[in-house]
Length: 304
Image (cartoon, rainbow, N blue to C red; front, side):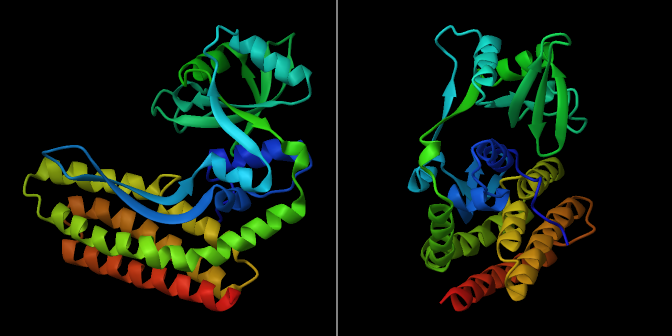
């Protein structure tokens, strides 16, 4: 079965940075601590083509305040030299987490000179002889030349994660907060996310109603891509599975749910070439809703 480890750069980046302070939190822990499970759909503004973005998670850095970690996304907009800023952090044994545009990261073969997106890197050290930084993300740990790092950093407006109050965090506080979040999911699901899932079914119908083949293709591909995105419902359900490994039933259910979402994303692409019908897509989605409901019922029963 697939695992969520190494699937989300922000979760990995925060987890890797906190390990420097001997705070042991997994990527799955960070997923929950930042907000965790959700289902939200947003319509992209376009009068001609119905396009939607799906989110399977909530990311709110302020939620880390609940365990005593203050972390914010900042930008270097005071004239500070960005490379000197990074070196200062390294020399003070802090390390630094920055946002870099993956279009400019040579080691990222999937995105280099192909896709523009923000990506979190943890920078550990600097070699003055080679002018290379030792960086780490969820798929790479190795050197990058300062010229490449600088342009990738610049293309995110020199954005970075600023941490404080880390020394006050206890492992007990983290574990208690995660348990509290897990217990809150069923009620949050009933009050908001279940309705979001049900409502979005009508939006799938609207995609099936598109008669222009080009517009239909664009809409299907956009939805498929959104489901596959690290913030989409596949990766978030994989994190749910990772978090509930102590319960075989929950682990299997959320692993299965992630696969159902992945299959839906693939079949949306098949819908473009008429290898699937809109009726079969809607049936798949209805089965996903049923499984999402079953998952929350199982969490409630397991944690009660």
